[in-house]
Amino acid sequence: MPITEPIKRPISVVIPTAGQVKEITTRLIHSIADYVDQIILFDNLRKFNKKDFPDNVLVIRKNNLYVNPAWMKGAEIARNDYLILMNDDILFNHNEGELFDEIIFELENNMFSVLGTDNETMVMFDKIEELPENMKYEGFYVVKSEKRNENWGAFIALKKNSMVPIHNELLIYFGDDIIYHFSKLCHPYAKQCAKMCFKWYHRMSSTSSRPEIDMIREKEIQVYDQIIHILNSKLKDNPDLVAALNKRG
Image (cartoon, rainbow, N blue to C red):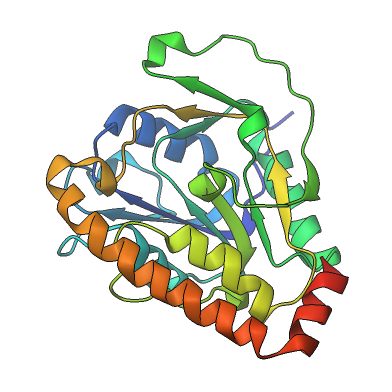
């Protein structure tokens, strides 16, 4: 019998990278390329070659867009309604096709605005040799996200029209926080946190890991604090909105 090709889901994946862990990023892309329609790789420091990837991988090399602007640009040019913003240093330990099917189901049928990741089901490793050969897969399931945990932004799934603007001064930090907090205002449905079994490369590998970038962190903290202050003010001045958010999760 002929071998059937994997079904590509109508999903666009956006991955910003500085190529710090090129082997992990390359392996990640090859592991999901058969299951999604489009992968947009922002090669911020020109470490990758398009010929190393399948045809549905778009490699974009411009001036360093950093993390958040790359996510924003990727959302803008994505050709699918389902969008995944992903770090460059994670690997999955189960059937990616099943995972993407479940994500589409949750976003389409349960009206969740955003799906993120949960710390409890992560396996940290520092070297590729440390990856366990076999890891129990307990299935994909969704629980209410009570708070944004440390690694929530490693893998963010949402509909394209649920993407909220990230302030243009936030280049590296807090983009996932903005998506987490403001999606509830724009789309007041129960925001959930996806519990997925996957492996995360422990040493930060994105643009934010470069030592020279640390000097701008303080500025971004100040900008983010101002944004959250405005958000809290809006909530304080709009009791009906607060009641609606509390009622719906």
